[in-house]
Amino acid sequence: MNATAASPLVRLHRVDKRYPNGALALAGLDLAVGSDDFLALLGPSGCGKSTALRVLAGLLPPSAGRLQWAADLPEEVDGAPRLGFVFQEPALMPWARVADNVYLPLRLRGVSRDAAAEAVDDALRRVGLAGHADAWPRELSGGMRMRVSIARALVTRPRLLLLDEPFAALDEITRLRLNEDLLALRAEQGFAVVFVTHSVYESIYLAKRVAVMAARPGRVVAELPIDEPYPRLESFRTSARYNAHCIAVSQALRAAFEASRAGAAASA
Amino acid sequence: MRVRAGVPSGAEPARTNGHGRSAARAALRRLPPLMAVLVLLLGWEALVRLRGIPHYILPAPSLVARTLVERWDSLLPSLWFTLRLTLLALAAAVAGGVLLASAFVLSRRVERALYPLAVVLQVTPIVAIAPLILIYVQSTTAALLLCTWIVAFFPILANTLVGLRSADAHLRDLFRLYRATPLQRLQLLLVPSALPYFIAGLKIAGGLSLIAAVTAEMVAGAAGKETGLASRIFEASFRTDTPKMFAGLALLAATGVMIFWAFNALARMLLGRWHASQRD
Image (cartoon, rainbow over all chains, first blue to last red; front, side, top):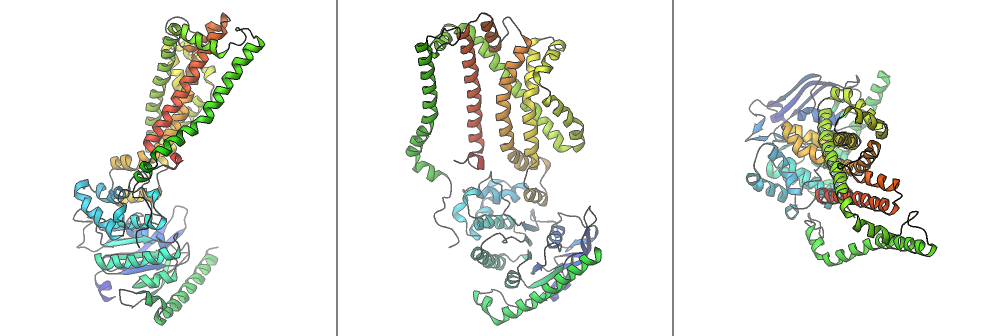
């Protein structure tokens, strides 16, 4: 936490985001992400979690305030972008084989296929899809497609990985497995994570910090540290400490929900 | 565990394994339509012979076939003319439709200005425009080409436009995230996304351009050397040469079917491995 406050990798500084229709999606959002952080953004739908993530990615310009990266971190590290993004859907190119989908970020940066081959193989192996380089996306299950999407985001070795409710559409078992694998990948590669979710359990199992957001306008109303060591084992999910975190986060989420309703009533 | 068992790593193993069987199955699939055509022709032949219908009312298929062979010298150049007209107009329609769709995608203002004109051209029956075009354009062949082009180009334009706009929103974001150049965006995202739509437009335009080529020629009432199957059919009808009318019709139908098959084959070649439309 202290390291985070001292030298954040990236921060949102009093960011407002107003949509063309006048709706205020984010209001005065302050968010700092440390270089070793795992931040979960949790909140009711419409609270601006995804908007905040898109502002962080530079896909959406803030209406007011600033997006600020660490001064010593250029936009590209060794020719690769400093962040990776995993969407709600796998968003693979159906006309390209798995390996070509993973190769895409490097291809767009002008890396030749030969020079990229090792990185692509490595990324696929890390997500457990080593034997599927030549498969077509439509031949894969939903969980495998999401693994390809993660491999694509990590192939450039980014410093920050942004995930927007990536496992929401998957079945429970697949989701738990992907959660474990995400933590293992992070332990191996040491990237920071901002993870948008609407699942209390997912946020606690994964994150170092949970930022609870409320809607109308979108803002952070509570921040709860999950001071538990990594690796987090299966036993953590059934521990009393996990349970205590669940209660605390659920209460914060309930309060955020009430605050959102109050905001709606005030603006009505 | 991570790798789900039983999922082929490519489509090849499944295809090579069942190759012999799938060829047999394909042949079996073609059997019903072939049988239907055969039954129809035999019934027609029997009807004409048993009822003694005169050939100037309804010629038997065997007579149509004989006429095809005997009049081949007159029919072949006409077929070639119609086919060339159709394919040239189609090629021009592809060029025009794709270029205009690209311009529309690049600029909403251009689209707002020109799209209504394209719609007006499309909804006005070609039979009604053709006489005017024949007045204004000196060369009959050029006039026919223009008429056919007008009909064929709209499906290409409309479909390519939808296709270019239908690229996945997340993939668009991804291309922005990695700072793709406009050329990369076009080559790696927009063209592959638009391809299935373009091909659907091509199939429609292929059939329409043959219809338009024949219609325009009939309206033009052209005579002489530079004429197509429409003129042969007209001439035959003036002489009550019904077998030759049928022979001309048979050639037109065969041409249409061939265009249809060719574009289906093209669709399989370009989309077969990945697009949902090509699954059995």
